[in-house]
Length: 622
Image 1 (spheres, rainbow, N blue to C red):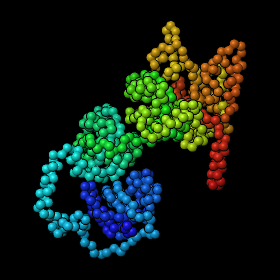
Image 2 (image 1 turned 30 degrees about the vertical axis):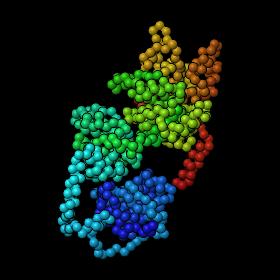
Image 3 (image 1 turned 180 degrees about the horizontal axis):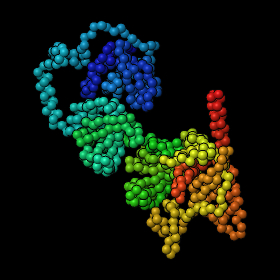
Image 4 (image 1 turned 135 degrees about the horizontal axis):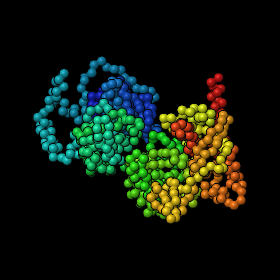
């Protein structure tokens, strides 16, 4: 086994920046220097003892590095690669797409003396026999080859012309891994699977009306990228791209991804125009991985609330609501919605809102099989703060029912053995603020009440969020503390003609309704006090009973001692609040409105740690 790099290995790479995958590469063994992680990849310097080149190991080699097979100062044999040229930085990057370990770490970096005289000719093993038959004119770069070889190429060209477009594209151009692409490259061809396809949307701006749609693509290494098409390209390729199929794509462009609209983990996004080439690789679908999920446990969703990052979840379906019709305020359009409640091994539940076709199609399938407790895997969900933590599908979300994957089998085994008998709690109301990866926002943006009340401009442009620790000092007993709600959608109901209650959201009559809290409480801390609006889930934690139960206490004959006593018991109890602050206009006067988004009991051990951290910071600053 070789214990030294291949002489002039870097020169070989530089002279052949994009090797033909159909030809055999010469021996290229380099030493790995300065190996360090960068995201899910590893950067290193490739050295042959004479020259060095900055290089990247793809994410598929992470296990090799983490296990110690590929080591700093070790030797690797490069079997396939791509060389990227970045003119603005005058640098070249070597992307290693295939390699094998030659030697573990050597004692030191290998260095050889640089010879002053070089031949300037790099011979590949299969080319050495042909060298005497070739004449190279120095300076012109023209190589004359024997006539019989030209005839062979001509015959190959005839076969090539009769091939299918996808096969022709695969043979004429080297397929590049997505990780090797950058905006400075010209010609490239990629082979990818469509993992998500958006709707063809219409937009309007100062230049007029247009069409746009997006697809998400994944190559065999699991690298993802989003491709966007406008107008002619959108109409041309919308029917061409089919979810789950594999395509060869070329003649596209890359640009730095807009993080605000980025839907996949890639620093770049792709644009395809009407001149781009897209050909289906129908016989090669098995070589590209299926949609990949990056599941977030339900008890760790708190840190994603109101963030831009989308999440994937998997869970057992606990409840499925009927379809509701929701009217959009923007255009008064009515769209279908259905809520499902899912749970996982963390013994937490969360409500997922399915919209549009997902509500009517997948949602109906889940409702029909709700008694069988199906498993759902959902990709690309937005995390909101309704009921503390809630999930909502987007147009690009994907829902799989009872998927065939290890996570699904593990979850089913847990549920059948113990999960179905386990008591579950909502992640929004029952999450401990001190739990790892949980609702860390309870300890972020911590302020005193006086900071909020003394800054009347807070929440003018957009809601401002803070965390406070305070006592509930007073609850008005004569306020309207609840409203009559639909048992299906929780929206307000009115008296129906005749009997029952009418729900505008569900467009139906019901004989019964439920009561849901909507109230204000006064909270106090050492700096001051403020009125805070509290809704049903948070109010139930504070009062200790449902609105229906409190109504029964209030309606009992005689005085209201039991009702008053229940409210009194809820006061002077410390809580951690996550609140939003907005500006509302009332009677032509702007007023500050503080709303409790989540409430949790005080974890005194966590509070003590927080105080110790503050004390340490004070000591350092002195």
